[in-house]
Image (tube, rainbow, N blue to C red; front, side, top):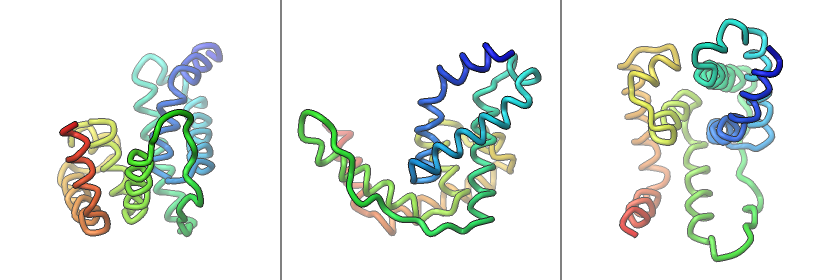
Length: 167
């Protein structure tokens, strides 16, 4: 049991960490979120290992993030300095990433989860509803409200993404 769980963690941890960062907007909170989700998954590993364990972990992450947000109502902050990457000029990419991160912070945890699932992980609305344990209409409403808010707080984000897709 432990070996298969360890293999799963080694293979899927990077992808889970990226999703956790998009959900939390903070590297340390993202690490905590992944660790909490994996600890909860380990308890049920025998039951879920033959199914889709990644979907289980992601569901735990989404629900845990909403739970943390409700309990603590943490004040969110932007990173002071963008991380440096070696080689090349990444100014546009860094600016786009910071704009997106700041814009995502204006969303509620449920809206953020819907946006991450729909547009980052490219899930269908039905899959998102199933993962979040809500109705299809709720997913559509959260997506609509989130996109409207993103357009309001970061209108330049649409221009930047359109510009990148034409390159």
